[in-house]
Amino acid sequence: MRLNQKKKYPAMAAEAGQPPELPRGLRPYRRAYRNWSGVINPGEFWYCAPRDAEDVIALANWAHRHSWGLRASGYQHTWAPLTVGCDRGAEGPRVLLLDTRRHLTAIEPAGPDTTRVQPGATMGELLGHLQQRGLGLISCPSTGQVTVGGVLAIGGHGSAVPAHGETALPGHGYGSLSNQVTALTAAVWDEDSGCYMLRTFTRSDPDCAALLTNLGRIFLVEVVLRAGPEQPLRCVSRMDITADELFSASNAGSGRTFADFVELTGRAEAIWFAFTKHPWLKTWSISPHQPTGAWKVSNPYNYPLSDRLPEPLARLIARIVVSRGRFAPWWGRFQLMFHWAGLQGFPPVVPSRWDLWGPSRHLLHYLRPTTLRVTTAGYVVLMERADLQWAISRFAAHYRSLLDAYRRRGAYPVTCGVELRVSGLDGPDTCAVPGARPPLISPLSPRPDRPEWDTALWFAIFTFPESSGHQGFFRDLEQRLLATFDDTRAALRVEWAKAWAFNGEAPWTDPHVLEHTIPTGFPINAESRQSPWNEAVDILDRLDPHRVFGNPFLNKLLIAHASG
Ligand SMILES: Cc1cc2nc3c(=O)[nH]c(=O)nc-3n(C[C@H](O)[C@H](O)[C@H](O)COP(=O)(O)OP(=O)(O)OC[C@H]3O[C@@H](n4cnc5c(N)ncnc54)[C@H](O)[C@@H]3O)c2cc1C
Image 1 (tube, rainbow, N blue to C red):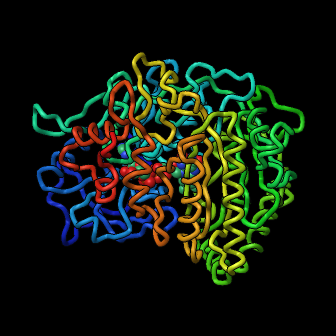
Image 2 (image 1 turned 45 degrees about the vertical axis):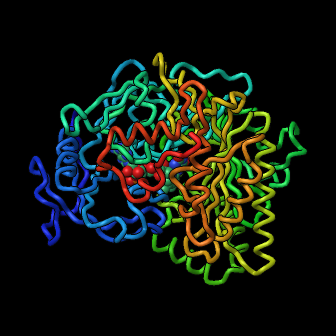
């Protein structure tokens, strides 16, 4: 595959404590790790940038020989400690991060509706390539500046289910990006030769199911993804419906609830700024021709007012808001007005953005990573489609009553708001490979014991990392959600990329959620007589028995559960 040399990276540096000589003339360099929110900021690590798949294999064997650990690294936009954790000491000194963004970025056609992609290519580049070939995805993460490898690792998603009367065209699916994969190539241990080698897995290979959503526990060097025909989209925004109405359980069928909009267009997102009455509702609908009144867009990121905040300014706002907790309601209202002004077409030289139309990729990528640097807790609820509005209303009621309870105590832990989206599940038919299985530990893996659960409601709660008491709030909310979505009418899973398992003081720590809730959310499969969770753990351990691609957090999380 063609190598992409266009990106510039820091000068290589020789320093004390550097790794033993790397294979194939690769040169290490040192750089700080800092995730997007700045919460995971443990200090400096050694990095190198593999040029091709052979470099990755040589590095895996080098790491095994010298007892070093390797971690795949993309844009570091993940909130969770999947690459490295907050504690530099716990990671140990012998860690080499492999930056995929420099060279592993090739994209080329693999067949009429399939595309071969290296993991460091961005989602923006992938969607651009697909568009040129008349192809597209039904939904995907809202930002294009994330790597394909990073998005696959966490089971990245957008917001789409079939609208009333809609049937997906071949190649399209309503689940995660992982479920679009038809084949992948990974660096895995080969028992016979006693070394790491490249191995290609098609979706019909039973082991493939563990690698599709892999949390970075294995290194993918290439994937083949299926896509469907390009379908232009119209995106309509509105702010005229109150949260009471949009999220109400009793109004279902009124035409003004979230589930009603989902029924109508199949694609919806609500952003509900803290302490405000009117959420920002966006709906996307398939629209082959430009509707009258809709503005034709020729690029992604069409909400420029909201997603281009310089980081120092964003940090200053955060400091001001959190320094006086009571500013939070004011800040919520300001955010709503600010976004309203952006939709109106402020500054006045730009057109109104309430109604947009264009190629799907220009409307699916609408959030730049230069938006406010917030931290976020994220979950997904699996349920029957008919229960969507019930689930939304339960979430909204818990969130609002907790926010009010904290406010009565003079506490303002949530300074930004919540985001609600909806998607389908990872049905393996999408990839059209006979014998394909769903990703084993995708948040969207179907529950074989609950075949009627066909819909997923995603919600994320955003706040400034500096907001005092937010860990306690997230813990309280998580406990309420677990009690409500308790596996009877619906079940809660965590969104891998975000924060979860709160103990009241820190995320990713609550032992019950880590050791019980998460693994049992992937319950035993009657066919294989093993839980998908335990199967994934077994496969990943077998393919990397020396845990070259492990890390302290994943080594603790990815362990077999006694029930399965
Ligand atoms: C502004 C913003 C908006 C977002 N919107 C969405 C959204 O709408 N939907 C959604 O699902 N997510 C969303 N995300 C989350 C984002 O999709 C994930 O965090 C994604 O993992 C980030 O990709 P990255 O390139 O930064 O990966 P990194 O953060 O660098 O890595 C993430 C994980 O991927 C692993 N990884 C990277 N490359 C490979 C590889 N080659 N093989 C195996 N593992 C690998 C890493 O080891 C790590 O475990 C958003 C993030 C931001 C900052």
